[in-house]
Length: 246
Picture 1 (cartoon, rainbow, N blue to C red):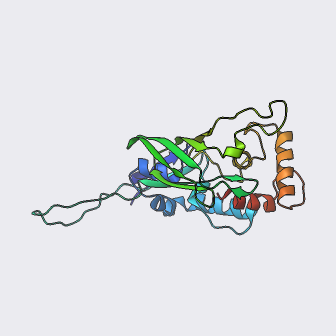
Picture 2 (picture 1 turned 90 degrees about the vertical axis):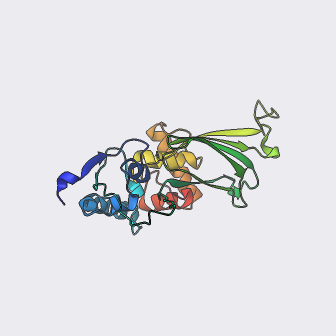
Picture 3 (picture 1 turned 180 degrees about the horizontal axis):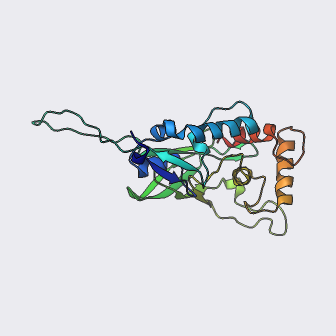
């Protein structure tokens, strides 16, 4: 097979390997394990091991600007009887969204939610349910979804401002979250570090100053009983992955 059969793809913001595989009508595993992607696989593995120690490699460590080779599309041929009806199912069109909600390390269990996502494949999809005993929402969604909107029921004891000049003021019964799926960069990048700290409540904004970032890292380290330095040490990044669950 000549290299002319391959296409080179530059990873864009919000793309993960599942969405890329869908675009080229192939599988994420086939792309990631193709021999022509050995160089980037090795580079990512080396980077992770250098920054994080021994850790499994993952195709989800891609970041905007990375380039990967897309193997040529090969139609699958099957032999079937012509006098019967057959059903063919395409694999890999579903992705799984997993979210955890906690309050002071306690799971926010039994809260009703509504999740709305937009898919080019299936249009608008709406799901509803409740967080489980671990405060988890686990929902299968179309693989091409990049944005979503989550409405989460607020606990009765959290519906009033607890202190300050607005103490006692009624808060909305519903919390609203805008979700950006596929936008989480590797923890070894500045944007990936900031995003995880924001999601865990240690940093106010992804665009916070470097001083605020250092303070957030210090607070995270103190919370995890890591010697506070304000710098993203290997131990800090590994713990951040562990607590963020991704």
